[in-house]
Amino acid sequence: MDLQNAQKIVDDWINEHGVRYFNELTNMAQLTEEVGEVARIIARRYGEQSEKESDKDKDLGEELADVVFVVLCLANQTGIDLQKAFDAKMDKKTKRDHTRHHENKKLK
Image 1 (cartoon, rainbow, N blue to C red):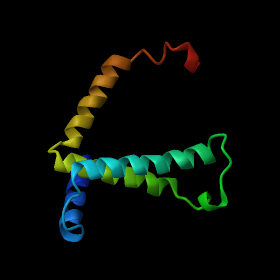
Image 2 (cartoon, rainbow, N blue to C red):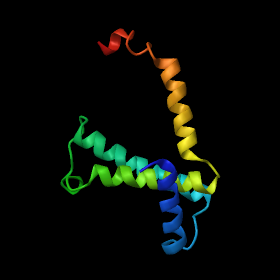
Image 3 (cartoon, one colour):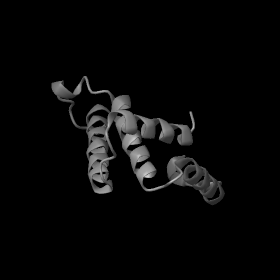
């Protein structure tokens, strides 16, 4: 599935089930909350913090999907073609970073 299709799926869902989009500020706050949930899982499961019993059933994939959903909402409501923006970003990163990371001694 491409990002344009994902944006349409989210828009269709919002229109059918969600009544309307939350405003951009609310969605930004929601995005921050969802990223925090991802950070909590990563810090406890892969980092040095001990994982609490209540965190052990948390699904990292589900939390990442929450982040993607809110990003798609923000793109839709602000008129961003995320596929076009992502493709342009990948092109820019490829041109800029083609050799940079291979030459980074910290990554060897």
